Length: 136
Image (cartoon, rainbow, N blue to C red; front, side):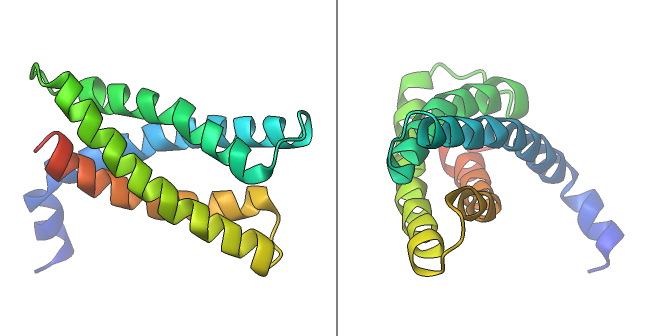
């Protein structure tokens, strides 16, 4: 399949992915900022700071994607939120593991490790939210 045919066939999904990434990028910056402030200024262990940052942006990401990106009008918000948080927890565990490996084993700075992991988590979360949470 030629690339232009692929784009035309998947236009809606590509637009949703771009919006999803825009939402993720803005919240990733906030997540990294929270992680940095809590670690550097409040002396919390970096993985605890990382966890707090994830909690803050998860709910915001869910709401922004439900209403702005996937334009979901269903009344299943609580059910969708529970599914979303379950998926987020799964990716949190994966990302914590990789942030730990990159930071403690490969000696990257925790903020760099976090930034490396974010695009992979974003892709996993886009696919899971599109097809399992909002079934769009």
